[in-house]
Length: 119
Image 1 (cartoon, rainbow, N blue to C red):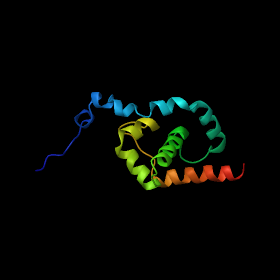
Image 2: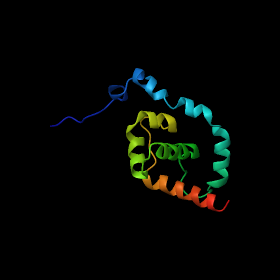
Image 3: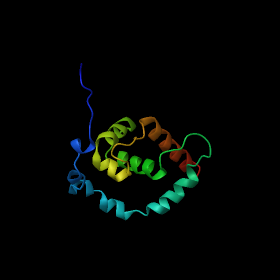
Image 4: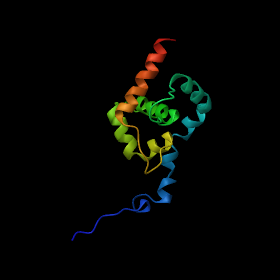
């Protein structure tokens, strides 16, 4: 009988690796923006009282910024969010947590574009 394969988070990523300087390379960019003001603006644009809870608005917005900065399609961005620790860190996504799918990112972008066309 084959043994089941189980993983431990520390087996793949050590605490020391999570403190690597390369994971801090977007910290200067992070410090440039007033995220609390951006969140207030986003909450007036993209809010719903019905349906499933959304990913945090800043997580979606940060994801789209990365997609623009790194010239990624929604599919490429979703894939990169799954595997790139720097992207996860910038978007405040937990290491073992869920990541927005390409369709979610696309709908969020479309909603922002639609809002912008009405301004």
